[in-house]
Image 1 (cartoon, rainbow, N blue to C red):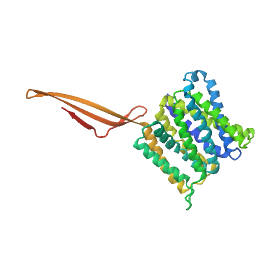
Image 2: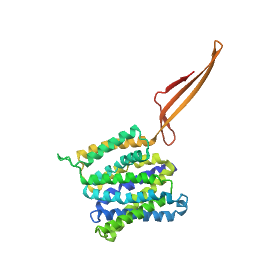
Image 3: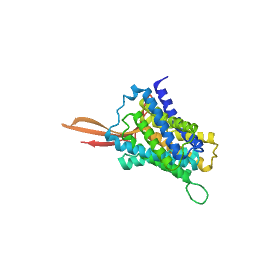
Length: 341
């Protein structure tokens, strides 16, 4: 199989594997407490990827290991990965899986705004438009309906989870050049253990062995294996294209929720789905675009009347570069001309 096609399939599988999290977690929450569920999901991811790293020792040894200077980001990552899945499981228990799957896209908004505020990253006009659409769709999905103008507790909890993951993404990006195996194992084992201690402290007992195994297997697939495949795809496709393919996961999750849980579709949900799809499409377009400013100077020298004149014409091209598999294209606005004599 062509390496690029294989990488695309891995990226889509990563999205699909994470998408199964919402409907299957919703089913397991009937017999497992939400905090305990969050713990088992992350423990499953950590144990599973830990086993993968031992199987692929040569591969895992290639990456740079974490060091003491990474500790603040690692601690922040672990703390946020304790809070986020607990909020998500609580939201899933009181809301619909389809809504939660689409609301997961609000993580894009949270990640971008935190990157803007904390790290002064530039936000393009297209991405601002996407943020507006995704935020509007999230508000629609959160609204309970009727004349009460109340927002559902379940949707608000899911949004809290996406805010935590948005901040966690910005912590993780600071150590993203280090071993992916090590990062996922640390996330899984320490975040899972933290959630487990909280679950036991608040009185959520351990479920039976079948539900423990089911939840950990789901965690390995939806969290651990999904991240592992994402990293593999990213090695060949690069960050931009992998992110674009991975953006389909909320829509796969929503479809799985409808198929497995038979959750009814409301008019509000359909409107929010269309708005969310438009916002996601803008995110994909912005992810694949690269803006460049290239000045091109042309100098012309000529003589008339015994006097030599030199003219320099500078064309400033502000354009977007779109990455594709075999070719690339550029879109240029009208150039600005600068004449120097």
